[in-house]
Length: 234
Image 1 (cartoon, one colour):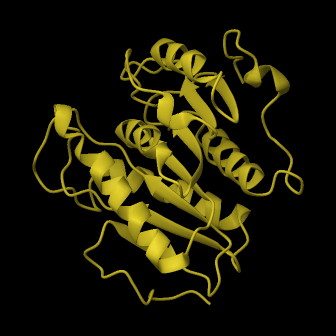
Image 2: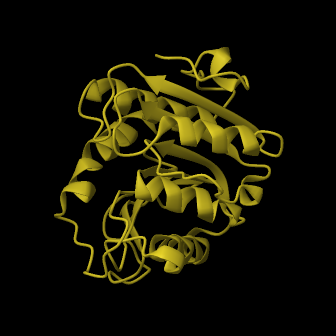
């Protein structure tokens, strides 16, 4: 049921690592990066390695027989201003996924720069929702592409790299058009998600499981996370 996928080719933007015979849904993981950098992105870079623990958590929380799990492969390490290179890579991966599986609901899970890319790519018809972990979501970012999508933001209270205040402001602008939007602040959480790492892993996996099966998997977030007021601290 799992094993080397029949396509797309290894050099593509979509890098499946769990491929059921007939997936009903998919989860794509997008690691972090840099503001600028045209050097190649490699799987052994720390930002990519940090997501491996999330992959294990998702593998444990999601049904093996029908949920595809994959990584998005970046060509470059940086966002690179208007080039927005990770967005192009994510859209390429979604296109490859559509060819591989057909139109299955897909959740994008991104960290930092990867979360920004996921939020930008959310308008793709394959995307059902976005889980943004410590997102780099600066003021003035577009939100129209989030219309009809589920958006969940988890941000560390001690994050000194990206701003939970800026992320909350962007989410407030998006709320009126999303299917549902939530945000929570992780008490003592840092940008690398190493402090309280088990909470980050478990909560992200439970959120994704709920998004893909809302009637069968409980929502791990309290109702106040979905209110327009300041995000609660968990």
